[in-house]
Length: 129
Image (cartoon, rainbow, N blue to C red):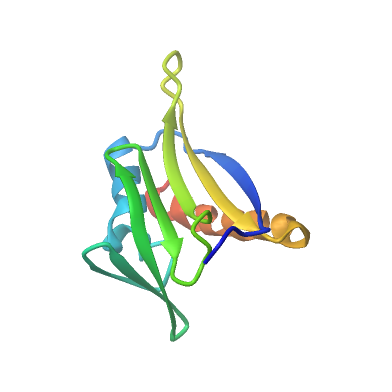
């Protein structure tokens, strides 16, 4: 597993009037992630299993900074690839946003941004924001 040719991208979503504790739980716990990111999420230490429509994919938790950021790496991905959820709060306005960092082939970045947008829309519906 060497370096990847995939391109890093980041998207940020405003999470109006969202309690930070609830948002943190939704990005850092199996129960929270299963509400919007996958159909089912199981955790065994740093190994997380995500299920969608009967197919499973495993990832390792490689970084957590409570209550701010969580980073995973899909099994089989190059060592420099990850996906990360990060909670941002504006000090002046207290506005909360969720930053998502991921990697994709250059031709797929726009499609991946649309997919993340759809998933974050599910998260917003769950949080009622």
